[in-house]
Length: 296
Ligand code: GUN
Image (cartoon, rainbow, N blue to C red; front, side, top):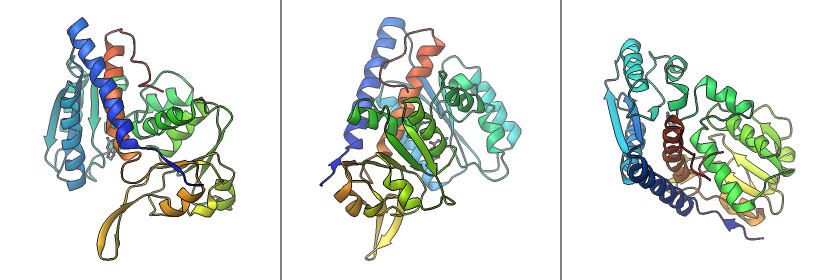
């Protein structure tokens, strides 16, 4: 079977269009412009690229973008003071502190200092607890993007067997909660899982989020399963730099019913969902109806 390719680039563009439509209505009907503040500490090149892209897409969607670029040796007290200032700024509806932070800063402490209702990353312990108990929360962007693509492709996910490979706080665990919320039977597999190939072979939905290049071969995939590849791994092949996912695309595409490519699959959905979360946070802050189809 040749798999359907799930076009994350096109899907992300449609999410951004929806976001822009909601932003225009918020401005026209209520005089409100959603605002996203991004805090970058230090000069990590990959983080600089992400932050630039986030700022650009925020402005393109019609929202206000506030960028705070701080020196790598910024003290914890100074960073906490900036977060506090953003927590209390009514023009700021979403706050994102770019990770990883320099080693002298306690990431958990900083993330948990963000007001939960402005935590558009969904990393605050309150949002983790709300998601885990099926309550309204801010949902981490990458798993939210995966869920949107799965719902778009399948309609209902009810009763499907889902295997999430990887147990990170940012992707694996929230992804499992979201799939459970959509009534999947969920397994979280990880490096200590016994007979991983057999576990993956049971799955109607496979979400690979381990950060190991092409670790899932096609013969682990049940015929017709949907494969969501969260991995973005830079490798060298034939003397060239190449981006590959956590699944071996060529062999998995031969057995899957649908699969996300790398690049052009899950990747573009992450920032689109960040914009969606910012609009959601803005609507909640103003007691307005939330945009449909942009939340979990
Ligand atoms: N660094 C890489 N991805 C992310 C993300 O989604 N959120 C934050 N805050 N930092 C990141």
